[in-house]
Image 1: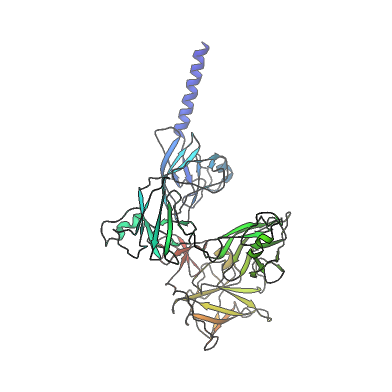
Image 2: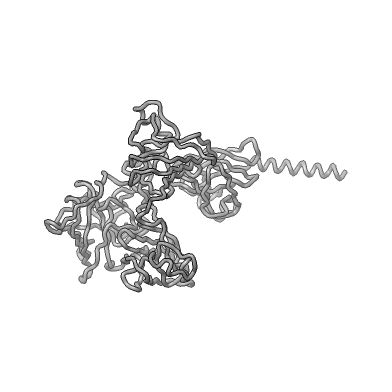
Length: 537
């Protein structure tokens, strides 16, 4: 009787579990970059195995993170309830590798990361083993295309065979051309370039000995110097690497803010890595001490200062106060302390830009009201072809007369395509810097030589001025005592204009909202920035 009763209970329990499993869902949130807790960006379908779901998940441009849940919320931003049923990695922002399952934990406020944004991935979620996997089929070989200067869709410059690791390919390749792509499949018609687009990977500038993200694009990879390199392509992480034992970089990959953690140990420091522009490092740092030093390497021991003495980057004085929103001059040296108002009890988190190209350090403050009154310096953007809100093209210094600033501005590019703006502060995003930006009345208003150029209060989408002169270096004066400001650009003299040695700029430069360069071709859709102006398509 007891056995029969026990079988009845177990049968009922299994029925309930089967019913719950059958009614369970698998939602992906975040791949659409919306992050609404009541709306799924994608929903996976249960396979023949109960508790295992599969499906294609499309990540829009700019989206690289996602979370997994079996329950959506009623409100669109109910993160407290959502996180109770959220499945996430044990490490924040853990990068998935194709065909390698990653453990997920329930109830953790963290996100998974896919290798490349703007890509569709086949995904498997297994609630039985609590794992998430990106699925992929890898070809037997890949092709290096164009590195020999020949861009025939049916011909490759070199073949990359698969290594013992599925999805990883490697070969030594001679590059006689600086431009190339990676193809997963060759074409059949030497004149049909569109046929290879679904198999053509590129991504812009490649730094030797450094991983480069690959994406499906018409844009080629390009290197600074032809040569022989060991090429490794990892389709699991969608990265490509050109390696050379003899390559000596102009700037190190990393710099370290020693003392930012509140200690004064030579083997510890907050690490910054350059990403967008070689030699310019940026990132968020939390300071727990009132001073720090800068080095391009850490010592092997806590007191190993002599070991890194030739690696130190210092201020122009033995000690210098670092104020948010103001640049500090740098030089190479042995001893210098940067003083900052932070402590263990009152830590300071700031976006830091360390510019070794122009020897400048900037801590971008978060005070939306800054500056009150006249700022201590002004900044130009765009005149050198770059539109990074945290990397100024020029710094215009304040004079002894309040509200009057004088300096130089250098234009790089072609006549008729020399745009620029002036900022009262730098920052990590456009919304922050635009609030105190000097703007033309309309985008593309002319800025003529030796003429007063009136500035307007910035609007929602402020534009840029178009300089009517030749590329080169000029004097610039900004008078903030008149209206919203008056700018005047003057020649430095018959021999004072410095001709640029940089390559001519193309018609437009496009960036995402984080300042990352998207190329010279207008994106077909999305939100992007051109000439400092936010555009939505």
